[in-house]
Length: 255
Image (cartoon, rainbow, N blue to C red; front, side, top):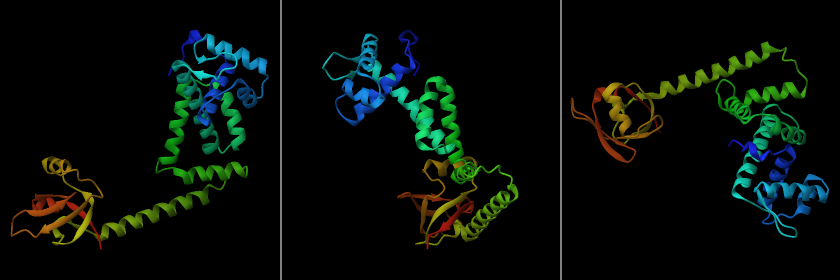
């Protein structure tokens, strides 16, 4: 969301909106005293801020009454809070900043950084965590380097660990491939899951139309007569497939 620049929201007013949102989630009612306690400010300061937010039609406020959001105010508060949470997560989970400090720094950063830059940081953090070339283990390595002020000079040991991991994965894939058989060799009553599909063109299109993907369970219903089609049960439905096409699909047997 892009803020309405005519609202002229200061960092302080954004903090008030965020505080009201957090307290609204914790309990049904918000009073000025609650805000003063949370933000560690004086009662008169809270009153001035609440009157300003009410004038901008972001909250509903009157003396001695509970504070509630307008639709516009809640939308802005959600955006401010989201920025804070995403930055805090990046500082804490990726850069390994101590939680309390990460929260404090995120509060300052959220007012200074444009939303598109914050979004890039969040996507970067997600990429690091999910990319098979990095992953959580890579982040853990960075945490170790930060915790012990390591300058990452021992690259040989790190590369050896990576090489060992690659070799282990390759071995596991080779062992799995050795256990796979063509679908055409699956006997009636045997069950397996699709491990690899080497089809193309119309044959691949017909298979994909059934909803079949890697890992889909498949079972031979009955063996083909010489030169005829294979009768299969796939995803609870029956279908036929030529023996030639079945040879291009590798199956991981279910013992």
